[in-house]
Length: 177
Image (cartoon, rainbow, N blue to C red; front, side, top):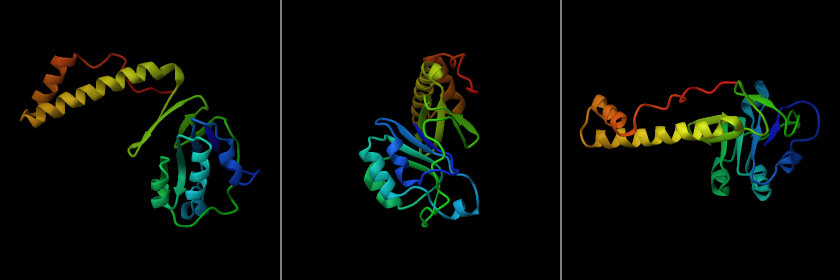
């Protein structure tokens, strides 16, 4: 994980050089009027990040050049989209350090699960438990959707899932730091 936290320091341009192959880059952008109308991530940064072996990018600010980002094949999740590129306010704050993004603490060894619905941060020590809970949830949803497709009511569909899979795992609870 490579994080950007703002502040004084080097230009954003070498930021992508801090990423390690197989890692996700996380960019925490300070919220201000200028960051609301400009972006800190685009096609050029994505091209270099992909060349460095990044697996994806999560940006708490804006990205731009969405079509080119999608063509690049490197998943980029951002808070928003802005046509305006980065300005001089963008400076590397730190790399491979803990940050808080979206109110959530993220440490360099955390596992990130991300898609178009959002981002989940999982601590290493919770990973196997989270995977087990997710596997149950996926199986549950498959059973419920199949039952509904066959004409079952919601109550009947949920009962079928319970009968086939048993109760939800006792440890299936929100994970908090």
